[in-house]
Length: 376
Image (cartoon, rainbow, N blue to C red; front, side, top):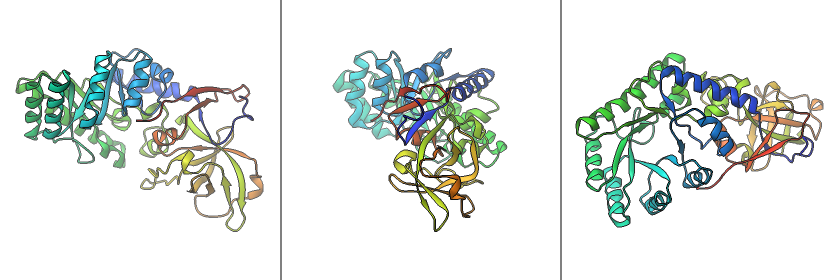
C-alpha cells in the first residue's frame, strides 16, 4: 500500500530504529558476558524474532501458548513460557513437548509443584521447570531464602521433572527515579537469582539456568556475574515509559500509531482523532513519571515530535489531542484529514491492539505489511 492508502488507525514500524535498538542491547549484553533470551511478547513476529536471536545461543521467551505455537511453527523450539503455569494448561504443555517443543514452565508455589508432579505421572511428561524468584515484592515469586524453594524442587524431582534453575523479574525497576537506583535494582535482581540458584545446587539440584532481566535492568546493570541469560523484550521498539526511565531517547522509539484528524473541539482547542484506546491501549505508564505523556506523544505524519502535544483522553475509537498544559491548539494547523503519529506509552500494550505493522522505512515507497501473532 502507498502511504495515502493506509487505513487509520494502524501500527507503523521504523525498522532502522528497531535495528539500532537491537544492536545496542546485543552489544551491551556481550560486554556483560551474558546471553539474550528475548521476550518476544513485544514483537510477536518471527522475522523480528530472528533478528533478535541472531548470534545468540539461547531461545526465546513467550507469555502465551499462542506465541509458543506461532514461533515453534517457524522453527524456534527452545521456549521459556514465562508466566506462572496454570495447572489446567499442563496437558497442553505436555502435548507440545511431545511434538518436539523444548518448553520450560515457571512456578512459585508448592501446590503448583504438586499439580505439575501429578500431571507428570498422568501424562508421562518430564516437565522442565524454572522456579520464579521475587527480588522486590512487585509481582510473583519466592524470596531467595524461602524454605519453599527446596520443597518445590524436591516435589518436582521426585516426580521425574527437571528443576532447570530460577528466573526473576524485578518489576520495581519501573519505579526507579535515576540511573543509580536502576543499577541498585539490577544488582538486587541478579543477587536474588544467584542466591536462589546456589541454594538449589547446594541441596543437590543442578539448576544450570539463572534467568534475569528486563529492558531497564539490562540497560543499567553493572555486573551480571552468575546470570546465564537476560530476558529483555521491549528494547526492540522502546516506548515513552522507557524514555521516561532514561533507558532510551524519544528518537529511539520504533513504533507509532498512525491516526487521522476527524474533528475539532472548538470550545477547548483540542482535536478528535480516530485512534482511541482500542488503537493505543489504556496504558498510563508515564503518569507517575516526571513527564506525563497522557495516552501518547503526538508527531506529524513524518514522525517529527510536536512539542508538548499529547493524547489527553481516549474513548474506544476516539482520541482527544491537546496541549500538555491544557492551553488551546491552533486548530487551523490541523485541518480535518491531517494525519498524525502517536508514540506509545507501552510498546507491548499498544502493539497488542493490532494485527501487524506497516513498515515505514522510506516514506516515498509503498508500505510493506508484517503480521503479528495474537491470542492466548
